[in-house]
Image (cartoon, rainbow, N blue to C red):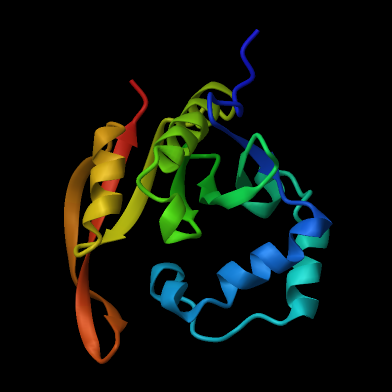
Length: 175
């Protein structure tokens, strides 16, 4: 029997207390704040609390954050379901491969496909959506290649570095 969260090169796993430094490095990397709409750093204390509560069920927490890990046990990034809406059977999805050297190697594609399969098979979701800045061509390509459709453009949606940026809305409907 196939395990939904295990792929050929990577697997998705729950956050562990040992992930504190990994989580801190991602959450406090100012170059990534634009993607997560973060404006301030996270303390070790807050991140420890987050990890302590990461066991909460998606139906209670309305989100699920998983670590993208290679089979050597090295964390490569994170993938999230957020704004989980059980009534309307939808959730947002976001992905990050931490180091540039690990990008463009298929890890993101494999992780995204694993989470799509999990979302549709185990959570019985009808749709997934994501928000991607217009200039993030690599992410747009990743999601479109996995079946997401661009359904809208939010103009001047994100204010970053003293300029406004447009953001696409993409959807994947479970047919």
